[in-house]
Length: 447
Image (cartoon, rainbow, N blue to C red; front, side, top):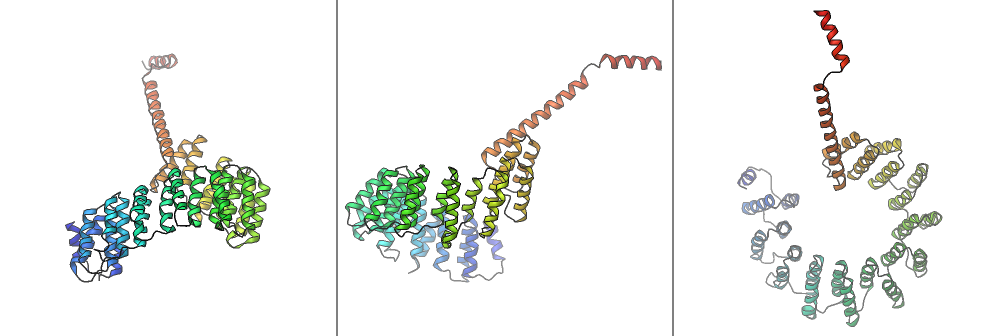
């Protein structure tokens, strides 16, 4: 610590707010030098630090669970009138809730007036949101019932808790809370329906989700494209493709315009079941509509995944080029996997070289594909060479790849040891009778 302070004392740079913030942000994951630097700047007194600098160090300390130091900084801020702001409050409730210090998070809300801030609905919603984000939904709901009346709870507040239960994956509690919303004076909005429908589809409760979806249209609470996409994807996943197509046509008739995600969801599942004529029909429709329906890299990746023969690749890549879709890491890795599965060595090499040439890899996924492909072909030396290259680049291998390469190295070492042992035994073994007889003849000649 003292060494850092001495180095800073020798620094000739002119300190500015912007420079201080940049230094702190650069050390977001290393609290100690950030805190030493902050204290040094504070003591220097060359510049008057703003609340945004204090909020930054508070966030760093809270993120690294250094709450003793955080309290010292907060106390210093509190001594300055009007220095604590809404961002300070956000940092406090976020970091306390993230560390599961629930009482401290609630305490930050209750002390708002002491800190020079108002107790209002927005700050209450923020508290509930962070508690729910870190899985303290039960606490958030208890607070809603005990304190909510003080601020005039609205549907947005109710949605925060509903979303908390849904993200937690607790559909039973979400259903109970949904009934509370219906029984309250708050009228469900699109977000309320969308949140609950998504949770239901994630848990396979498609029947209930479909009832809610239809109820939205009847209640004049028009579903947005996100909700429609969620329903379509869930129906396709359950292989209820005709119903998914009916929802797709219905949303267009009712004025909810599809987007690229809608088409991609349908194309993905149509490719899986081999309905390629429908896939290309949807693709043509996307091109006709243009705008936010234009095919993207995800669309063409689904098409590539559906291919059965190497000669079909060129056609899809040409379509990509015509539509202005550029190759990305995912597309190159997908091509690499396809050519490896088809055991097309030339194409594998070509894809690898193109990836390197365009600066889009190879990444961890690329190396994983190559290592496993080479191993399956019995090319252990080549597989280990790629593994070594991967590690030299600082890439952390997937656990299965690490296990495979450790196994290859162990087997290689064992084979080498057995080879050495065998060679040693051969050297020590009695010579053949032929060799002995030859030696006798030589000796008889010499003597």
